[in-house]
Image (tube, rainbow, N blue to C red; front, side, top):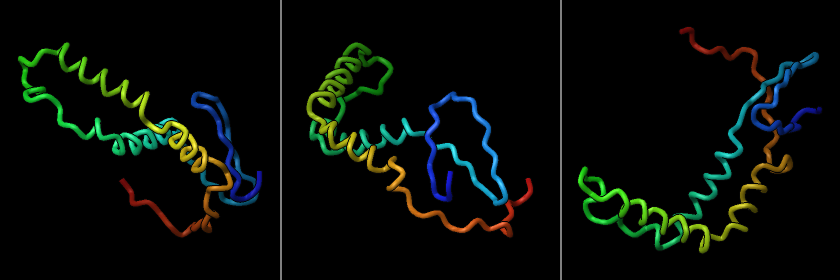
Amino acid sequence: MELGDLLYLPRGFVHDARAREVFSAHVTVGVTAELFSELIAAIVRLPDFLKALPPGFSSADFPRETFKAEFAQRLDQLRTKADLDHVIDSFLEKTRAGAIPEPTAFRADVRLPDG
C-alpha cells in the first residue's frame, strides 16, 4: 500500500498491520454506521417521519401494540418512500478511496495526556 491508500477489511476479519520505515496510523471506522447515518438523513426528508407520535406514547399504560404498529408503519414508509438510490450513492461516494482527503503529516511531537 502507498501513502493515502485505504484498505477495507470486513468486521471480524483478523489482521495484523505493520508500518515499514515510517510512522503509520490505523483507524477503525464503522462503515455500517455510516450507511445508517445516510439513511437517517433520508428520514428527515420524509414528512411522515416528522409527524408526532400518538399522545401518551411514553406513558406506562400506553398500549405497546399500538406503539409497535405506529413504528412498523413508519418503517414501511421508509422502505417504500425513501430514495434508497440516493442513500446508497451518498454512502458509496464517501467510502470510495478517491473521496478520502489527502492525509496530513504525522506529528511525532504530539503526545496524549497521561491518565
